[in-house]
Length: 304
Image 1: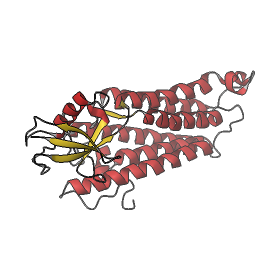
Image 2: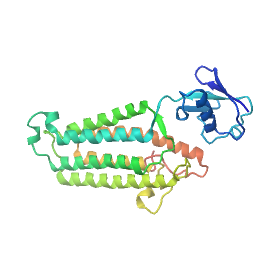
Image 3: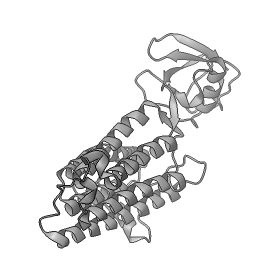
Image 4: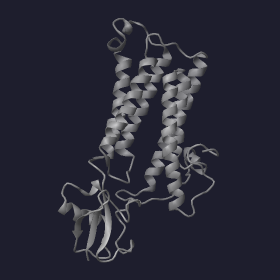
């Protein structure tokens, strides 16, 4: 059995793959194609049934896709790839290091004499919160997350790093500035914001663990995420992506605690991006699972 591979940009045939069977999978196609075109290793390839169609899953078989002998598949080059873990470790390590430079070496940023002015307690707490958040993200990347795809386009490592590293410097500059003034409502505001931050971080971690347990090691299996015995997972009853909900709550708490406008801007930017991701995942859940709870929203209970 043979399959013609058509370039999705030019519309021209770039290879004919033989020795296949109706039971051959898209992953088999990728492996065979990489033998002919070594430049395009499997993680760099995407195949579609038509130019504007969605990318096929590795486990799809030619039989299930109704592709007969001399059938055709459209190939798309995803570009150079890099591992998800590498991207996450890079984009999360940067903000941790950058923020701590502003906090521990103020003279390098604000000039000589900046290190002689004592920090307000809220500045110390903010540094602890920031450090905890990104250290948690790094550890989750190493020991908790299970990725459905092993790689992503290498360009993302630059795009994501600019976002995270840039905002880290933006927030750190103002929170650690010698002229920074504590919140207007004093300790009560600080403790309120800190309580919200800690609560949300625990919730975010709990949801990440719950999502990890949905996927057996080494598989790409997808299941409907459901609330468990952990109260922090009960948010699954009303939203599809409670990890994003908790993330927004954490940075809202950080903003309240520091009463810092750049922190609020970072929170709003993150909320916008996570809302886009959450809406996309919510729609995919509904398409994929016929019995998916229709009462759920994407990220904000009962609203969005």
